[in-house]
Image (cartoon, rainbow, N blue to C red; front, side, top):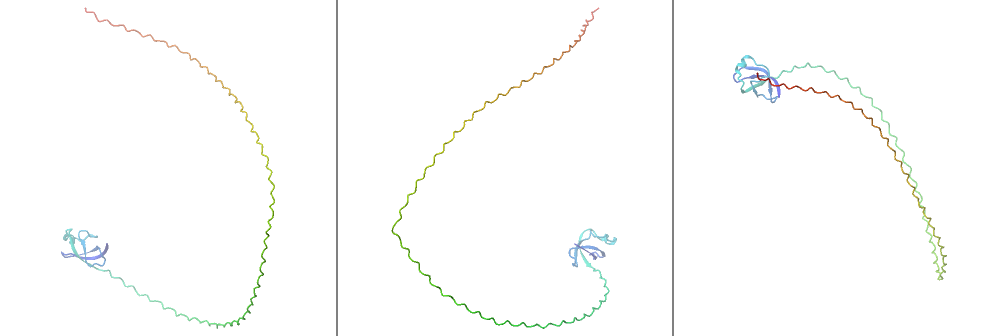
Length: 191
């Protein structure tokens, strides 16, 4: 909602100046409940208002903007021309001397290897030398295990509990109070 200062021309006639709520800021006309103005209306308009919803013509009066005095802009200083730097002449590089071609190495001829002579097989077989029999090692004699003799357990001596002597309490003899017998009153004899 946008609130703007406006002149309101009622259907019944008469003007009301005040701030009104707008749905759209640029709308030339808007619906407005007359009974709920933002500022209290004058007496004349109050008499004419019944608190009903009416269509109201709203003329928006824009505030005139004050024209600002034009400030004279300062003149820009003239740019001083920069002195151009002299370009250095590029020195041409000397061309590389022609490369001397290397002499090709002559490949050596491969000398053929002499063939190996074939081994002459001996048909005669060598006699196998019999291996000496291994002497059996003597069996180890197992040592007899010592039988452990169980030690007799020592009997624990039972501790004798000392009996506490109970102190005998001396009974105090209570003295019985003798109740006094009430004498029965005999009924009065008839005279």
